[in-house]
Length: 436
Length: 167
Image (tube, rainbow over all chains, first blue to last red; front, side, top):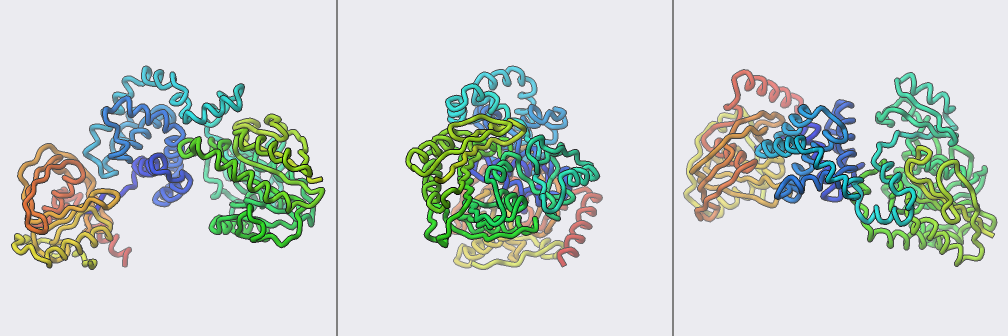
C-alpha cells in the first residue's frame, strides 16, 4: 500500500508546521518545499498563511491542546497535533467560517492518512468552539500564551524596553506588509509603482527611505512584473538604512563582512560605484549573493571566508568603509520570521554576543584611518547592540562613535534602535564608528 | 538485499491466490528483507509477496515516518475486527492513483514471523488499514475492487494517463 498523497493544503501545512515547531526546521525553507507541490497561487498563499500564523501563534494553541486533551498528540502524532493547532488558527486568527474550517480540517486528517483520528479532531475543534470564550480568556491571562512569545524573550523585552514591550509583542504578531527596494540603476521609483499598479498591486513610496516602497498585497513579490528584470528587490526598509549610513562614494574600497544573501551589497552598488568585497562564510550562501547581484545587473568581488579571520582572505589593503551586519538573535524580525519565537533560546544570546565582539575586533584593524564602520543587527536586545559597541569603544582608543538620528526609532547608547513596526519597519540596530 | 520488480495492475498475477508458507528458511528471510527494501524505496508503507511475483502468504508493513518499525507477517489470519473508517489509499501496483476505501477500524490478526514463531497483533488506525490492504493482495484482491463501477473506471482511466505520462 502507498500512503495517502498529500495535496490537501491543510494537511500539507500540518506536516510543514510540525517540522518547524517540533523538529527545528526553518519556516522559510520548509514552506518553499511545501509550495512546490501546489499549482494554484491561491493554495500557495493559503499554505503560507497557515504555516506562518501557525508558527506565530504556536505557543498559544499548543497550550490550548494541552488543556483540551488528556494526552496531547505532540509526540505520537506530530502532524495531527499541528493540524489541531491550525484548526484553532483558522478559527481565531484567520477568522474563517467555523463550520467550513472544521469540516475541511477533519478532511485533512484523512489526507494525512490518519483517518482514524477524524472523530477526535472533529470533537476537539467543536469543543473549542463551544468553550472558546472562556478558553481564550484563560490563555489571555498569561503573558506567554496571550502573546505567544517564549517566557525568556518576554522577560528580556521587559528588561530592555520597559515602556515598549507591549508594543513590540503586538507588532511581532501582525503580518508585516511586504517592502521592496527599487534598483535606482534600472528604474525610477514612480515607474516601478506604476508598473505594479498596472498588475493590480497597490504600492506606496516610503516617506523617508528614498528607494523603498511598501506594497499593500501579500502576493509573491518574486513573481511580480519587473522582479526578474532586476527593477526591484525584496527588502525591508530597516535594512535600507545601511546604504545611507555608509556614506558611499565612487571608488571607495568597501567590505561587506557578512554579506549573504547580498541585499545590502546590492543596495550599495545601486547607489554608487564603490569597490566592494562581499564576504560570506558559507559557500552556498555566498552563491546566493552572486545570483542576486546577477539579477540586478551588478557585480562585485564575492569571497567565501570567516570575517573573524582576515588573515585567510584579506590582501592587506585597508577599507574606507566596513559594513558588519553581524549574526544575531534576529529578535527584530519576528514579524516576518515568526519561527524565531520557537527556535531561539535564551542560551543562544551569549554565544552570539561573543561572535559579534570577535568580528568587530577582528575587522577594526582593516579599516583605514578616517574610515567608517557601520555595525548592524536585526536584534532588539541591548546585549547584542549598544553593549557590544560600548565595550568595544571603551577598549579601542581610535574608535569614536558618530551620533545620528533616523526618523523612526530610539537613541540606544551610541547607536540607533528601530523597534519592530516603528516607521512600518522591522526591528534593526545601527551604530556608526569612525576611526581616528 | 536487492530491490524487486513490482507487478502493476492489470497484471493477471496480481489475481493469484497465495500459498501458505511452509519453509521458514534463509530464502524466506531474504524475500522479506528484499520486500522491505523494495517497499521503502517505492516509497510505500506495505507490500504483499503477491506484488513481487512470489505468491506466498507473506507481507511486510511499516507505517512509521522514520521507517523504523518494520513488521513481517507470514501466513496472517484475521481473528477479529471492529468498527469502520474511510482512509485514502494508494497501492504500489497502481502508481499515481488514490481512492477512499472503507475498512475495519480495529483488527486482531494472528501471524508467524520469518522464523515461524506465532504471534498475535491488535491494532487500529493506519496500520490496521494497511494490514487489511496487504492481506487482500494474498487472496488476489486489490483496493479498486471496493469502488463503485463509475469510480473504478475513472480511477483506471487516470492510471492509464499517469502511465502514458511516465512514458
